[in-house]
Image (cartoon, rainbow, N blue to C red; front, side, top):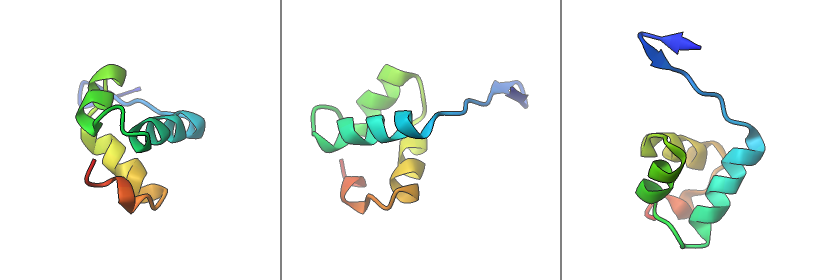
Length: 59
């Protein structure tokens, strides 16, 4: 799907939780995970808010 010439990606709930789990284990920062999965770090911030994981906001 495209919006203003950008691809809009939809991620499954299990994928979102997988990324948050990786972040909580402390092996990667938000920036590194975003780079690995080809997304913007703000996307991960949205998931942190959605799943009420405020403990991960400073990682």
